[in-house]
Length: 292
Image (tube, helix red, strand yellow):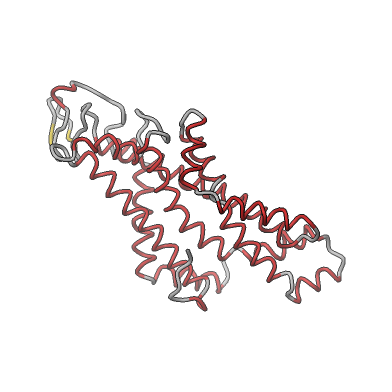
């Protein structure tokens, strides 16, 4: 890692927003990866439903098992479902953003570095996709096929690449006029090599910032789809369907929906803070501005 990259990392870590966001995301990721170790083990486990349903937080059931966040209507441990649900919510959000970035990079790079009708067609396709209401399109696509985590990843990825493509297109168009690109062209290098080796690596800064912000948005959208019943399906836990399962018990068992709700808010806020801190670290000229 060069001095410039090291300085940017130190700037990110010194930023209070970056420290808080990275700490929250690191803790959530650690709990998700270590779910079998830090929990009861089976998020769908049901023992004596009548005796263990709606136990309050820090209760011990008849089998001597401690439930740090209580149990739900089926006697399932909320903490166990929370950490296993983190795997689904964080995984779906991250994979969806990676898919969006991959599509957006290809479309934006080709549109920005090509000539003729190709960029016109690609930009028209991007503008058309941007004009479509994303939530309605998400619900439509999710209703056409059997809901699953894989489907949510594909749907979120296919409806979230347009802003990335616009960012990449603008950066590529700007970099294509730089002297180092003109020098590479004069040396007879292939355009694909110039694009892949010289232009795209210099166009990734706004993409990284947008991806960090996009992960929080994707996690929120996944939770919304699961809450509506067209996302991850029970008994597989995700924060969205956990909130949905506890919405009818907010008065007598508020912990069922509160725990995943707080986790969702903290992670989404952490992603936003990391994105803002990344923007200031990677683009100091734009310090104080927020990329949306």
